[in-house]
Image (tube, rainbow, N blue to C red; front, side, top):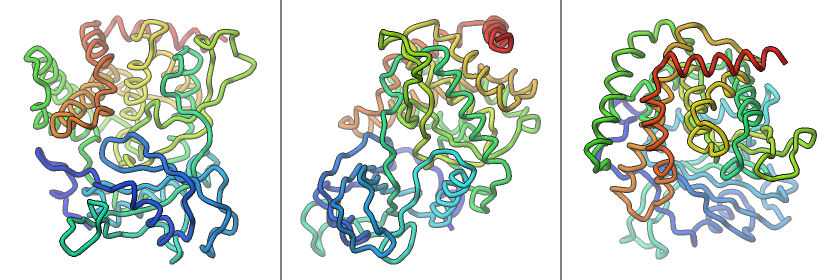
Length: 387
């Protein structure tokens, strides 16, 4: 297993796999015995993910009938590829959640009957002894058809439904244990938020840098000392609009698309799972739903997410008390890492998705007094309880 010092990305380190698309059909054929008909790359921060649709012919004894909707080929980043036990742990949590009845991608075995394999992947289309290469873990999961929540209207009842699903996920994760997560450290875990200060090089504006430092200082002073009062458990770690597959709710639909209500069909991408504090997952969800919200006051999103979550699972007084700072911390984390990643690789404009709405949001939330935000959220939660 990788040493602790190897599990945190360092400043200046490029960890995203370099994989020419030309190699994807070969990878699928040689590892999984399937023939690619089409291949589409998904946007991502640190990994490479591809939606591959294949023919109905299979040379894989573990795949009798290839999935008509295709698969997702996941090539893990350089940091996670150093840690085979971590990849095993991620696989086990997927299987655990699936057994609990929650809709998540299913692992697909390769020709050797394995759920993952470490592969030598060349960085250019020409493969020779002089071509640069690296080793990355590769796995295949089923593609879940449907639309992500990205770009969909954020209505109060929709984020209530998302909060409720998150509560169900946390209930399903209770009792799960894999030894890798006992010591695994991950930069995107809010417990490592102090380390994010090292990546501020990408934030050029002085006022924004000052705000980021203030949020980091406040989190360190007000949240870290209360860890012993927070509920510890496995979390998804990245409940954002691109990882939530949704469907429209017919009985709650409006004639206008902008007022449409959605519910969760599935949750995808478990590459950020980590042993942490469940309240952080709630804060992450609130952060991303607030960023996307355009149809009502962004400060009220947290109330609707919390109402849904609390309908199936409780939060203690301390968890409610630190929620504002944790939400701001996640927005700050995303803004800092987005700016840093773009600073390192200007071609990766995907990492700036949070920036346009994230900067105004974090300022709005940070400037709103905690008692006012708590009061707004409490009022919304009580309104749901009265229904």
